[in-house]
Image (cartoon, rainbow, N blue to C red; front, side):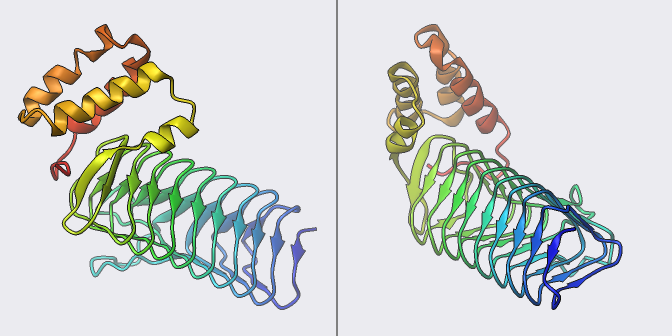
Length: 262
């Protein structure tokens, strides 16, 4: 049997793994699935069509799977999907998706999500991210793997934060943030390459050199975006170890609808 506190209210159709733990006064809706080893703290509300993987730690007073804060929402059975081994701290609010997008809000694996973080409808959060206290993601935002977002940061709807980025404290993200960069401020400005993060993740010297060259081409040479992209595409000839990093950057730049922070 699952460890479900007697004061918790669990929908009869909810699927709770026998090794999950549900704390006092938690409310679990009928369309919720909770995987093995996940712990749900006191007074949490998990509702909607929400699927939560294994070994997550969900702290007290979180609200997960509530309907989106979108006036167009008309009760469609949209979803929230949370992966494995995430830490979700107090008072976080994650909403389900909308039919105007893919209908799914998704959070990957191994994310460290601090108190009062809001993840709105149709957001996509990757793996190994850190979202500090009071980070607010508006609808349709994408956050890449290993990104770190500083506290009290607001991210405008449909913006993208690339992989391995660092967004500084209390920033206003109103442009796409290319992978590997450090940004902060309001208006947002690119400060350099996320060298500390890359070194912590054992990027080789050659890969870091290529990423620094990409930063130079985008921000220090006075090139147009298309000129910078063309030059970036040639970098694997000089830095073969960085071919995947170059491909990631080029794909991000090519698909930016809002324009990048520059």
